[in-house]
Image (cartoon, rainbow, N blue to C red):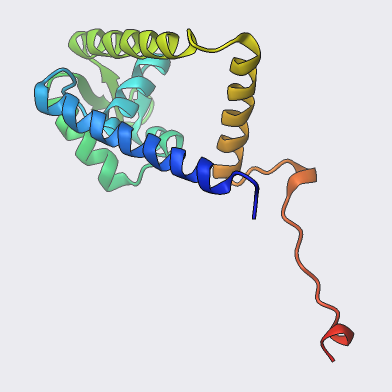
Length: 162
């Protein structure tokens, strides 16, 4: 087993727990009216403009039912509007309303401040190490291993078992 597996695993679990607990607390006290999934949709539309539903499904890796549920809530709340796509009337396009754009900017600013405050306690070299770790973690989580790091299939030699 790896040298620091238990410690790293424990801190990752704590981080996930903290994120989930923070979301619940923020929603409860009204400082954040959206769930993390809803924020992902808001962020995607805020950063990249109007998108078709199937494009959002692919980009965010959400199934249709989940995205439809999120879209309905964001539409009812006045953050997103759904219109027929200009190039294909059979598909729908999502875009932020003015209210949605304001909320997107607010969320982006809060996130920027949070990350900035966290990184204030790290040196440049530590920031580089954190960035490398996060990039590798994302690649591994998406199954995009670098060629030289792909897990090797174990080949058993039948003569050893005899």
